[in-house]
Image 1 (tube, helix red, strand yellow):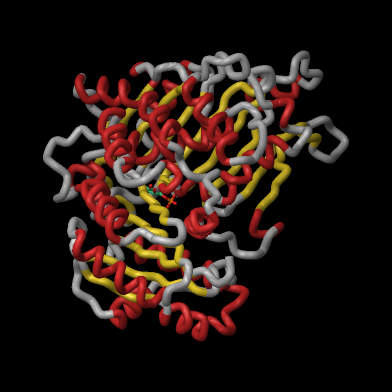
Image 2 (cartoon, helix red, strand yellow):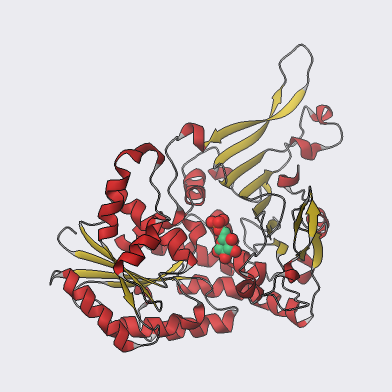
Length: 489
Ligand code: BG6
């Protein structure tokens, strides 16, 4: 509401995420007039820094929307003037009390809402939440805390973290981010499905043969090996980003668009997932590779990765949902680092047309004739549908063509970063795109037994060359379920 203050404290202000994502997202929101009139931003970290030094640091990464470069410098100045810095320890209640006095001074006695963004390693989450909630909560408005994964590394540690956080905060105050939910195409998934008659009735085992959720990056764990080795690709990408997409894709229609209604359905579908079988999983790890004069190191060459690490940098899995809508439909997931391309997409392969009159035009391979709907989450956001079409001419030749909705041509405006959407939602108290604790529990319940099995059995990852298409095992896995990966043609 106008008149009240908003104070945003970025804890871990000198970290990578803060610099690359959070400050730029806050600036973008300010730039587009989404922030309340009275807002201030505080950076909090251990490093000693002046306000000026913080401003210099963050000014390096602020950018303006392409279509509005004109008054950019001005806007940056105005934004930076609202940014301040407080140096303190992460476990010192006194230091958060000092922050509180600084906040109060700037808030000038008005009603003040306070948002804390925890951009810090998980081992200090609880300390910061304790200090911030006890010493720097708002006393006349709301206090909310945004946390980033990892939320534990299995069911037990995740519940433990939830229990600890709940000593200081209510579930309503905790905003667990999964930044994939803030991506435009992921948000659009429900719109596409529930508001189009040409899709909604098809969304079940009756018409859909398989669904593929694919994530690939064309770089390794460069510099993040220390963090990554403790988690691996299943925890880093599958258990959260890909499973969230799957839940949104497969959930039953929610009663309404309210956050609780949507999250109830997501929990329900996650709880309907069958246990993941080890035989339905392929794990891989990249090895060194040189190509065109450039050589890329293996995962285990990273000095921060322990020798002989078996941590997967690639995984593919077939998952099944044991409910009436999806019984028997394979949901294939694939996530990998150091692959040939950077891409995230959702692919829906439909069944064959019964009694297809044009069968002979496809030779023996009817798979070539199935419709496929693709949502390309990034890069080059797009939705396209592969259909069969007659090639113009006197003969009867068919080919597969795309009905193609390419965002860059249909919507030339730049697409906001996921963090802009999510920060704005947290400020407005919209919880739809944040992970509720029971959702988190359900996602861990799905992956914990598998992770334990992989670790207890010391399953060795299949090696694949840096920059390749990943282990061939992923093809065999798909083939066993009568699936061909759509991204590999
Ligand atoms: C993070 C993972 O959650 O997502 C990273 O920890 C990964 O390993 C990143 O690189 C990918 O996000 P985006 O938005 O760049 O696709």
